[in-house]
Length: 493
Image 1 (tube, rainbow, N blue to C red):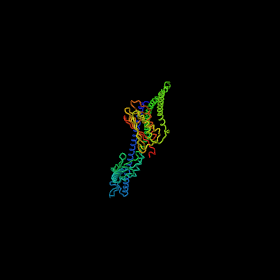
Image 2: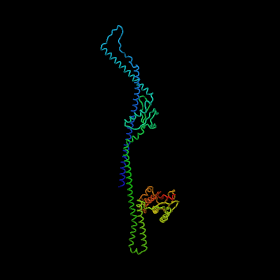
Image 3: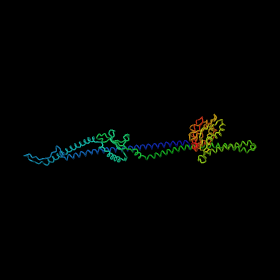
C-alpha cells in the first residue's frame, strides 16, 4: 500500500474518531447538566414544601391556642350576646292593653332579628379572626426559632419531600440568620460555595430573617450514577482510537521495515556476488594450462580464492549471527573474563588495519576492576565491530584516530568508551542506528558496504550481557560509543 493512501486513511479515520469523541463528550456534558438541573429543581421543591409545612404547623399551633382561649371564655360566661341583641319581654305597665302582633308583622320582625344576629356574629368572628392573625404575626416573631423549626421535624419532613420528588439521597442542613449559623446537623460544611448549598427562606410571610440551608454530600455520586452508562461507550471509543493509532504506527513501521529489507537484500546480493564472481573467475583460470605451469600464478590464485572465501564466510556469518541470537541466547558460554585483556588483544590485532589508512589506534586502561561475565567470543566481536565501524565511517579528509578507554563508572559497572574522529551522525540517525537493516547515509561515498546489522548485533549482545550502550555524535567531528557492563560479583566487592 502506498504511503499516500495510508496517510489519507489515517486522516479520515482520525477525523471520524475525533468527531465521535466530541459528540460523546457533548452528550455526556448535556446529560450531566440535565441531571443536575433535575436534581436542583427537585431539591428546591422539597425545600419549599418543607418551609410551607413549617408555616402551616405554626399557624395550626396558634389557632389551637386561640380556640382554647375562646372555649375558656365561653365557659366563664363572657361569651353571651353582645350589645344590640335584645330579648323579647312583655310589657307589665298598668293600664296597658296587651295585644298580639299580626302574623305578618311577627315574621318580619323575626327575619329582621335573625339578620341582625347573623351580622353581629359575622362582625364578631371577623374581628376575632383579625385578632388571631395579628396575634400569630406578633407572637411568631418573638417565638424562639428552635420551637418554630425543630430539627427533628425538619429532617423528617425534608426526607419525605425529597422522596416524593424522587431524591433518595443523604443530606445535612442548617438554620442561619443573616449568614450567622444558628444550629446545624452533623456533617454540614459552612465553607461550601453557594452553588453547592440549596437555600430557602423560613416563614417568609412573617418577615423572618431565618434561612434553611441544605447540603447533599453525595450529589456528585448521584448525578454520576445516573449517567455512568455513557462512560463505557466513551472508554471503548478511546480504546478503538488507541488501537487505530497503534495500527497506523505498525503499518508505517512495517512499510519502513519492508524498505529496509529491500535495501538489505540489494546489499547482500552485491556483497555475496563479488566474492563468488572472483572465486568463479579464479576457478576458470585454473583450467588454463599456462596458469597451472606457473607456480607464482597458482600461488596468487590460491591466495585470492582463500581471501575471497574468508570474505564470503564472514558475510554469511554476519547474516546468521542476528538470526541465531534474535531467537535465543542458549548458545552463549558465559565466563568471567578480564575485559582489559580482551580489549588489549583486539586493539593489537586491529592496529594494522587502522595504520593502513595512515591512522592511529590507542588503548587507555583506566579501570582497576575489569572482570565481567560475558561470552568471550561474542564480547570480542562486539569490540571488533565497533572498531570496524569507526574505520568504515572515517573522514576521508584526515587520518582516522581511534581511542579506546576503560574506566570505573562506579563500584558495580565497567565503562568502555570507543572514540573516533569520523564523519559523525545526525540526531535523527542516533535514534535508529541500533535498528536492524538501518544504515547511516554517507553522502557521495559509495565504498561503505554492509547489511545494517553490525550495530544491531552489538546492541543485542550488550543487552544479553545485562549492560547498556549509548552513543554521542556530531556531524563532521566523530562519535563516542559508551558501553556499561556489570562487574563480576567478586570483582565488584
